[in-house]
Amino acid sequence: MLPTSVIIVLREVLEAALLISMLGAVSGMLGLSRHWAGAGIGIGLLGALSYSLGINSIAQWFDGFGQEFVSATMQALIYLLLVSIALLVLRRTRHEDARTGSIPVLMALAVALAVTREGFEILVYLYGFSSTLSQLLTVSMGAVIGAGIGISLGVLLYYVLCHPAIQRVPFISFALLALFGAGLFSQAIKLLIQADWLPSQLPLWNSSNWLPEHSITGQLLYVLIGYEATPGAIQVAFHSIALLVLLGLAAAIGRSRALPVDQGKVS
Image 1 (cartoon, rainbow, N blue to C red):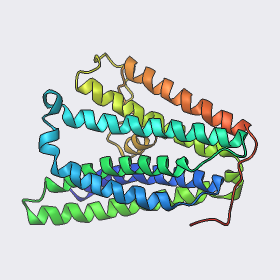
Image 2 (cartoon, rainbow, N blue to C red):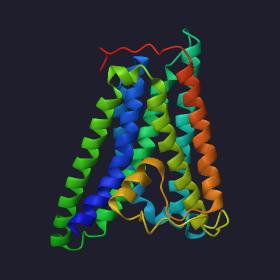
Image 3 (cartoon, one colour):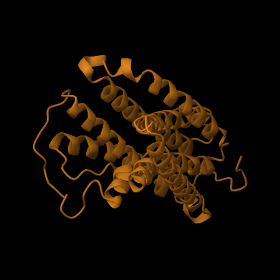
């Protein structure tokens, strides 16, 4: 039970931690304050609590698929926010006087949505063991360990992306955001397929034998790129389109003039 709780909570925390890390690195490139991160996390925690308290009513929406709809909507919105951020950054690289005041707001919204969704999943998981104190203590211990690992990996990624050599190559951070964002969009499509809002199809391939989804590597790839061992054609198509859009923006940003990196600004 302890290892399972570690992996489950690690996956949820890591998803939000990686997003915060990558957006924080972009803030460094632009010389922007990182106060948006605290605001996004705070709003997200309140959102997770509110979502958890109202889940019984939400789950009844759309003929019993309310939770799938809400989760898919949040993931799709995060992707659209990442596209919007990339477009604004591209505009800044081409126009020195372009305003970037809305970028921190969009970053805060993306983080708030991610923390709301992942925080909700953790709260629901822990609540499932609330009736037995011994199990709750064991699961909570695993949750703390998993959260600690996830946050540590996020911090590590942040400092790697903030290295001056990497900050001078904007394509790296935005390519990672592209992989992450496309994975989220793919997860949203999968939820819509499960809710029968999109047609289900036979899988295009099955990689379960050499990389199971529930393995540690599979779970980490699920967080980073939305890995699935048996994806259908619709899911692959939407994932590919979403990835190409953000990669195209990343390439355009990389070809533009260097971003005004402010290495000294860490607030």
